[in-house]
Length: 151
Image 1 (cartoon, rainbow, N blue to C red):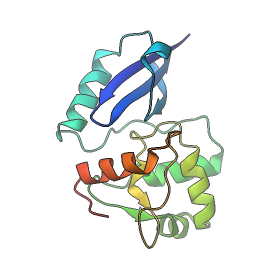
Image 2 (image 1 turned 180 degrees about the horizontal axis):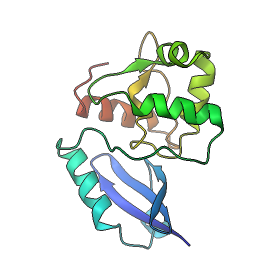
Image 3 (image 1 turned 90 degrees about the vertical axis):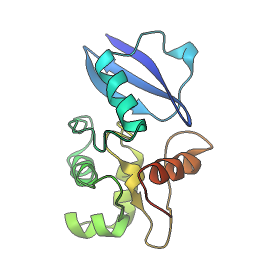
């Protein structure tokens, strides 16, 4: 049974969706009315620690719900340390693909923040960000600034 929970981040609500206790989706937006379940204590602590600067990487498995190519991109993204960024082109070279395909896989990442697609930027600037909200780029800037990256 899927359960939606909300975490109140400094930039707004985050929705976490669990299935049988396993985190299957994390969206950088959320509505309290659509998330009636309490957030598991372990995730409350992880998110509190991340936003307090005590946790740099979530060390959580990537989603199994993507294509093999998407999973390859998500794995590469998961290895970018906090405080660093890589370009879409850098990741494309690393996995033998193209930057647009990498960007597309980033946009399909169901575990935003946990698989830190905000750490993937364009060669000449911020690039895009698919958080599903109009303020997506502001959230990406906030997250990068929080991690000490100036873009």
